[in-house]
Structures are given as structure tokens and as C-alpha cells.
Image (cartoon, rainbow, N blue to C red; front, side):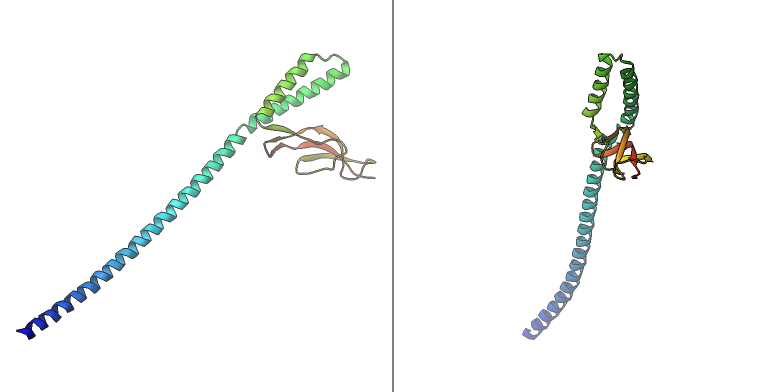
Length: 171
């Protein structure tokens, strides 16, 4: 009887061991699958967070530069104002109110992020912020701004319209 119990015990141990191996194999497979799902979820979460950051950046840019078209239109109005003021100054009949209106428009645009590009006669020509309309012979060094035809403007850091200038050719 003791021998029979020993045989039964060995048989049960062998069966249990085989069962454990199968269970361990199944458990390892399930853990591998779990790790794959977790890694996929983490990648998806990271992708979503990156997408969200990109969209916020895009929306910020749209909010900063979304009014660029109206700014360009108002720049043209200011150019015509300047032309009218120069003409009236030559005739000597400039009313103070016209200057006040122009200043008001300029202040409104500055408040929205518009700024003049500061270029004056004698400055070196910079193609990043200015557009050369012509080159003329001059006693100034080559590549020097001789005359500013139209002012340039920036909207925040972006050049909205380059300054239009005449540049010296040199002698």
C-alpha cells in the first residue's frame, strides 16, 4: 500500500508539474500580451500629447497672425495718409486733426502688435527687412539705403511688409 501511495504521489506530481508548465507558459504569454498593449497605449498617449501641443502652438500662431490681412489693408490706408500729409505740408495747409487721426490709427495698430521696421537713410541694406526698388549711383558706400520710399512693418516678430528703399550702387 505504501508503494501504491508513492506511485500515486509521483503520478500526481508529474501531472501537476505538466499543468504548471502549461499554466506558466499561458501566464507568460498573457503577460507578454499585456506588456504589448501597455506599450501601445503609452505610445498612443504620447502621440496624443504631442498632437495636443502642436495644435495649441498652431492656435497660438493663428491668434497672433490671424489679423494680418486687415493690418496690411490698414497699412495701405496709412501710406495714403502719409502721402496726403506730405502734399498738404508742401501747400502749407495741414490741419491738426488729420495728424491726430493718423496717430490714432497708428496707436491702434501698435496695440495689436504692429511695429515699424526702423530703417533710415544711411543704414546698410538688409534684404531680410527691406526690398530694394532701385539702385542709383551715390557717394555713399555700396549697399547703403539712399531713400526710404515706404516704411516696412512687422506683426509681432514676423515681417508683414518689407520696407521699400532705394540703395546706393557705389561710385
